[in-house]
Amino acid sequence: MQDGETLAEWQTGTDEEKPANSREKGLNRVLHILDFLHATQRAIGIGELAKGVNAPRSTTYTLVRELVDAGLLELAGDGNRVYFGKKLYLYGMAYMRGNDMLRRGRQEVDTLSHETGETSELCMLQSGRYTIIHSSPGTRPFRISSATGLQIPLPWTASGRLLLAGFDRDRIEAMVSEADLILPDGRKLKLDDFIDDIGKARATGYCVTSGLVDAYTKCLAAPVFSAPGKVEATMCLVVPIDTSEERTAELIALLRERAARLSIAA
Amino acid sequence: MQDGETLAEWQTGTDEEKPANSREKGLNRVLHILDFLHATQRAIGIGELAKGVNAPRSTTYTLVRELVDAGLLELAGDGNRVYFGKKLYLYGMAYMRGNDMLRRGRQEVDTLSHETGETSELCMLQSGRYTIIHSSPGTRPFRISSATGLQIPLPWTASGRLLLAGFDRDRIEAMVSEADLILPDGRKLKLDDFIDDIGKARATGYCVTSGLVDAYTKCLAAPVFSAPGKVEATMCLVVPIDTSEERTAELIALLRERAARLSIAA
DNA sequence: GGCGATTGTCTCTTACAAGAGACGCGTGTA
DNA sequence: TACACGCGTCTCTTGTAAGAGACAATCGCC
Image 1 (cartoon, chains in turn red, orange, brown, cyan):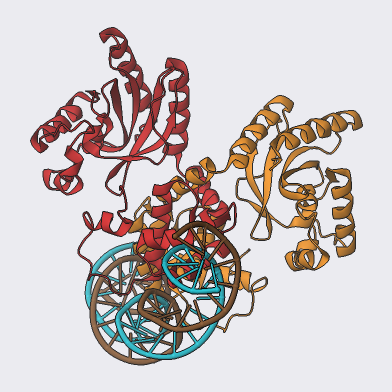
Image 2 (cartoon, rainbow over the protein chains, first blue to last red; image 1 turned 180 degrees about the horizontal axis):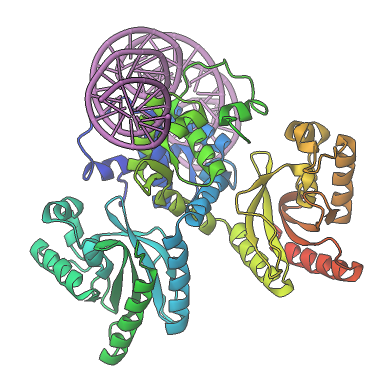
């Protein structure tokens, strides 16, 4: 999502056809509002918000008021900006408490990055997109940009290749748009190559990509299973691209061990 | 909320009068659903959920499907139960990231409980109720029951007395129901005494309560200010009721120092 | 096997929420 | 001073979503 593009326009690409700009259900407006705030990552004025989600101003005011009353949103700073509210935080913590894999995964990621000094992440599929669920920075001087909740095209990442293992070709095509195949530096991946990669990743039980999101890092990933064959998440390490073969191999072994420990033999 | 009581019934106490059981807006239904799930703290069947929030079954099915599609809820376990979804976790993390006080508060609470070995908590007002925002267990053998998101009547706690500092009598009366004044062991507080306590707490800059929620603990609390005079949160320690005078005094001093450090001089 | 309870889906009606748009207010700037 | 702009609130209309209820399928229980 870039420049003046609205969330609605941005989504119509992936979305099913909607009957143009008819009346919208309040709940849908709300879902858009939440997504939009998640994308902007900061408090935003109500007018701006209305533009952003392509909703009438009057409707937006009403909905925002209701959401603020409910505690899902909070008025921020000067009073005419809104952002997420405490209640969402509480719900989020409740989700975490009820989710063993997530709770233990965060733990593992934290210790892993502490032990190795490298940036470590826990990733999952979220509504068809690669999502960083938790990340722990590592101790290197240069910081790899990655925030919780960040969503990145699947083909750009090692984790993406693992997360799609077990999906058939149709599903994968549906999840990956043309734009997703274009790397940040302009190179274009072939869908077939990507699907090959997925197969290989599945067979070897881990995945390494070099210089995809940027030219200076490589990405090591290992799958976490929720059931035999079902990849629920991945753990990954982001390391400098010139990391030696030996160290890379060591890190992969460590990563796979920890990821396996996370997997449930249910 | 107990036995077969529904959320709706449970709320009508505090709520404004609603025109009986008319048609309800979808968004309101959703808010009830989220609150209900937060109260139950576990995945729940859709039928049961419909009963719980007093909504028609058909409506509930529709809403749940939409929420699941949006990622706010997830189908759990066997497939016909629902609970919070990943997206709520992501929104919650975004809230935390955008909220300095909360982020630093969690940190302080963790280190405080680590240093002292006592259970420590960060508390705030959430829709007129005392809410545990973050808690760190402490190392004592007996565990004090307290989970993030737990909501407790204000008069039962030391933090409650601090959080209400600065509110006038009317506001306080509005926030405290008759039932809130009855302690778990059946004793009944006088509203006037409670309001006196609030004034004292405000003046001394901390608050201690003994044997209120249970007979074996006392609760030490210090205020965190978001602006001069405005109590945004409290930090508190839950310690055995027979903790010596000296140690209690030490802990209070430590607590006040940390709470002051959290306060913003904006 | 027979019966009651629950689960998931579907259809149709109408009460009501989403939206258009007007209004008044404060603010910046030409 | 006049004008353009964004903000917050209100009113009124109509398209539509909430809800009642019927239905088949499944489950457990005697």
